[in-house]
Length: 445
Ligand code: TYD
Ligand code: MG
Image (cartoon, rainbow, N blue to C red):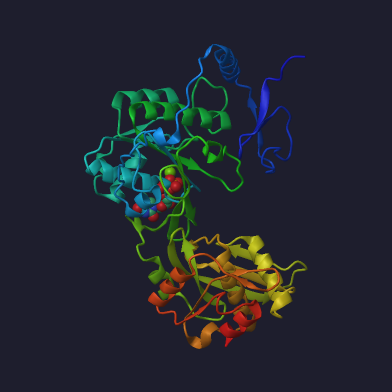
């Protein structure tokens, strides 16, 4: 039987299967398998690997303690929050992937970083495969500084990009974006899993050889329809996630993988008319903006290793639907389901016939169990139409257990200190209130 000429590749995890299926056998995502031509080059590669196995000599392993640890020289980007997330700046020869939804500000952030480095006398290059040079110029004009000094090429052909990299030998290059560059040696379209991998791999080889630091921009779509940058995660040295909502001003950058630093750091930015501005004291901003109306509470969250105070709001309204609405922004929807169940069972607040909306203000995302209590208190306050804390500003944090107990979460002391620093006289937290019923009672007064 003739070998099929195509394979089905998962755009989320890169798993390959000969036959199409609705659900990827690799990562269990739905509707992510796309048909792509089978690459004969990889067949050649594997047979070479097989042949070399026989011929290659063995090597003597060395003890880890005797391995020379490289001291990574860093190239600071001049954007404090970004450097912090990167662990001190870009490492020469490394590949950093910046993922985020279209319009979030990836091109703006990378242009600003290049402008700073250009201004500091470094050799930079901006490769745009998405916008024309004229469009990038318009952005650079808004950003000011040394942005107009950045050397740029608008190019989508991988071969040309690699040749330019080798000819120019920049210290830092931005490739915007990995999904729009394609190798003409492959038949599949730009953005397909095979192309995205090939592009990243080829750029990485050149970058490592000539010690160029690469910022690779990648789009993530909610549907995962495009070959998501997830297929690149194992290849690159660091993955930064740019989050927030396009319509909102606040955005966060966090590392979800970092070979040269911690993945606990996050930076908060605000999009202004002349670019992204670092929000150095986001807690002050969010606390000042908090409404203190029924349904509002301040969550003492952790953004990586930094405490952050954010307002959580809830709205509870009688539902006209058979299946009431559960709408969330900034928290996990399943977490809301859990909180509602615990409130109903252990705090006497049943909301089976009500629509519930929960929102973390400012477009911030809080993905930590410590947010449970804030969601519970905001919902309880909204359901009872009573402002929390008797008019006194109130903070809270804690995880909800299924039996109605409040469970402690990390960095309690730092969360409390942050709350006190910003004038939240009362903090509802697990060490003071053991169960949800008592916490709700104390908060509602
Ligand atoms: P952009 O960086 O192009 O997003 P991405 O590369 O992630 O797709 O810009 C995002 C949005 O930000 C865009 O709609 C325009 C806006 N913007 C500002 O508000 N101020 C600015 O100074 C710039 C450059 C862009
Ligand atoms: Mg862009």
